[in-house]
Amino acid sequence: QVQLVQSGGGLVEAGGSLRLSCKASGRTFGSYTMGWFRQAPGKEREFVAVISRSGILTRYADSVKGRFTISRDNAENTAYLQMNSLKPEDTAIYYCAASSTPGISRTTPQEYDYWGQGTQVTVSS
Image 1 (spheres, rainbow, N blue to C red):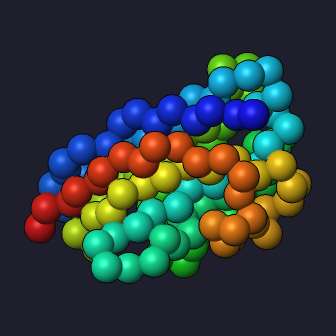
Image 2 (image 1 turned 135 degrees about the vertical axis):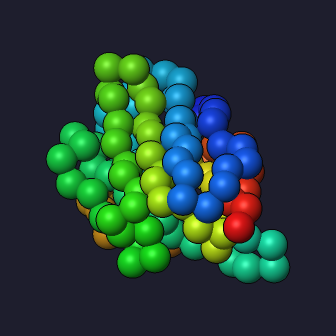
């Protein structure tokens, strides 16, 4: 069992930056693939980024590539999402998630076992 507690987020102007954190309980954080998803009002939850268990491999949605960076610190049981050059269309509730299946092809919500509580990111124009 893994519990994920998110922090960060908030309101920022377009072009600004935010960093989201996702801290996991337990001593097996390094055995989970970690992903970030987001859900805007009236839309389905969509993939944002994923990072391998070691942190070496990453993958991004085309919409955030070059602007967002996913990372993790296994010693601190924490995953991060650094978001730069934010746009109004990035406004959504952001969720971190953990998958017990290795590999960065995990891009659908169904492939993840545990979820954070979600955090609101609002980008004003």
